[in-house]
Structure formats: structure tokens, C-alpha cells
Length: 368
Image 1 (cartoon, rainbow, N blue to C red):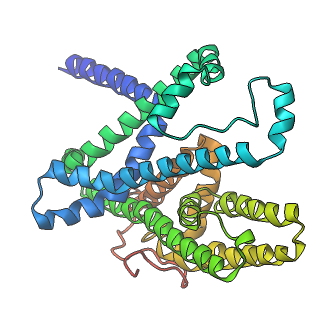
Image 2: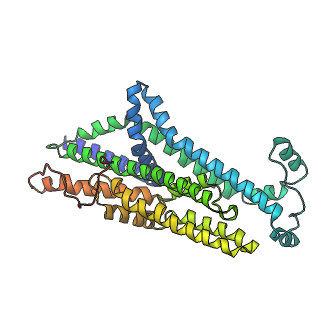
Image 3: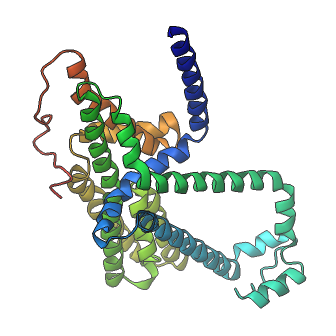
């Protein structure tokens, strides 16, 4: 009997190691899937009031994140193409570039973005340089696109089935319960992960709204030469950039300030530079500093310390890469929850039914 149990245990260990190796190869996609799951789960459960089937609710919850993101990226690409096209027409730099690059013609009028114009451009050989570049780097481009689509497919599938069958996995884990330690730990960790990761989503939405209002309000008060270009898009990108630790929103509003400075400098209107300085001051105070001090404590979770959470956001990408931005907070929550709930009971301490004491100035997401 013992030999049979040993063989079964050995087989289970081998399967677990293989599964762990496969999961490690796609750890970035799985981490993002967990983040999306906890970010959309409250909305998924809210849809139960309308008696939608589980599959429809999961699809709607994913659409709340996926569709706006796709629209945002598409809108950004369209604006980028439009601005590059305008730059090619107006910038004197292209005249100098055309002397060294024989296929650039600054005097040529870029085609209209219509199907007939694109077909005519293709027939005339306008796409030849782009086609040659694609053929020379076909292997790299194919591998990059395939990897992106594969990871995107994994994220969608895992998130979708976590929303539908996450409760079944929770019940399966509870079959290993011992003196209610596993149940207490899983339920506490689950609630805290939802509070922290859903708080990230709320933080992005709040900062996006504040940034859009600030940029539009600034544009109303300043001359056209120093206005924020595309304030709505810039505000949303500022909110998304708030997820990036340390640098954060600066990667959006500092380049904006550089673009806004270019026009007055080239036209000799140096007096207008004061508006750009005012833009930086207002953005740093209203968009960058105040939300970080006021909103982040509300969105930091139920028991996770704000300072430790910020360290996780900063050190996560350094240790794990970009997906560490989502993985490090998850690891921190699991570790702190274990220290609060399971560890004292495993060491024989009397269980504390109260909640861990928090700093006086820290808020909870439920307060918001």
C-alpha cells in the first residue's frame, strides 16, 4: 500500500513540476490574467442582478477592460499616423533627409487615407521600401507578432474561465482544509487581492478623469500655440501611465511639455513659455502629487501597508521584468496574508479574530 502511494505521489510531483515549468514560460500572461480577473470580478458579480448567464457576464466584464484598451490604442495609432503625415509635409528636416535617402520626396503629397489611394500607392511602388524592410526582418516580425497574439489569447482565455470557474477552484482547495486554516487564509487572501488589484483599476480611472479635466481646463485659458495636444487622449494615457512605478505619469506629461515648447521656440514667442511652466506646475500638483497622497491610501487594499505596496510596485519590474508590476503586489499580498492568518496558528498562537492594526492615516477601499 505504501509503495502504491509513493508511486502516485511521485507521479503527482512530476506532473506538478511539468505544469509549473509550462506556467513559468507564460508567467507574464498568467500574471496579467490574474490582475484582470480581480479587476473585473466585482463587475462580473454585479451583473448577476440582471440574471445574465455566466458566459455573457464574463464576456461583458472582459469588454469593460479590453474594448476601451483596443479603442485607445487604435486612436493613438491613427493620431500618430496623422501627425507623422503632417510632419512630413511641413517640416524642413525632410528636405535634408531626402538628400541622403533617395526614396524620400518632401515635395510629394502624401496620399489620402482611402482604399483607392492606398491601392494606387501600392501599384506605383510607394510601399516597396516598407515591403523590403518587412522581408529583411520577416523572422523577427513574425516571432514578435506570434508571441504577442499567443500571450493575448492566453490572457483572454485564463481570465474568462477564472471568472466562470474561479469558485470551483476555490472549493477544490478547501478540500485540503485543516482546522479551518486553509479556508481562513484563502478567503482573506482572495478579498485582499481583489481590494488591491481592483484599487489599481480605480486609481487609473480616477487619475484619467483628473488629468483630462486639468488638460482641458488649461487649454481654455492659454493661447493656441501652447495648448495640450489631444487633451482627452493625453489624460487617459496619463492615467494608464500611473501604473508604472517611480516614473509613472511623467513619461506622458513631460513629453507633452516638450511638444508644447517647440512651437513658441520656433516662432520666437518666448513669452508664451510661461504658460508651459504653469502647465508643469499645475500638472505636478493636481495630477501627480495630490491624487497620489489622497487617493492611493483609499485604493491600497484592506490590510496591505501603503509603503510596502509602493515598494512592491517599484521593485517588482526590477526583479521580474515588466510583468513584475502586477506579480510583485500579488506576492506581497499572499505573503502578508499568510503572516497575519496562517502563520500564528501554525506556530500555536491564539488566533486573533480582529484585523491587523493599520496606520492612523490609512484608509480602506470600502471607505471609498
